[in-house]
Image (cartoon, rainbow, N blue to C red; front, side, top):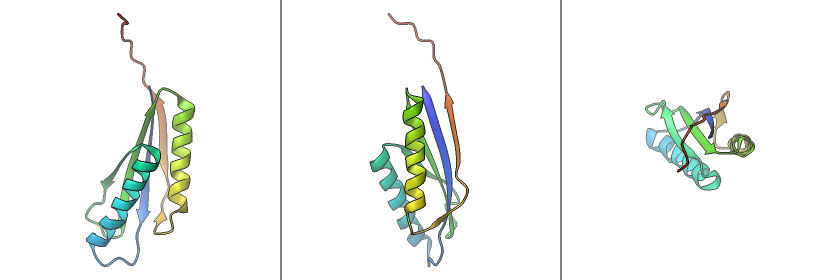
Length: 102
């Protein structure tokens, strides 16, 4: 099993309320989930009007697929003009399980 994780800090400016921030963050999360079939959530800074930290996970049995998905998600985030993003942190690792086949 190959797991790719990514955290993306996004900076939102000119918002008047947490409700405005949540509307944008929810839109980002839903678009990523539907387009890339990835697990996506706001993982920190929920009470800040200006910053959100988005966490993303992709799981597959092929490392190339995970790497391509992570690259495409990063490009998608970079192209969204509603916010600025900070440094994108990513990690890809594998986990092997020995399951006896019956």
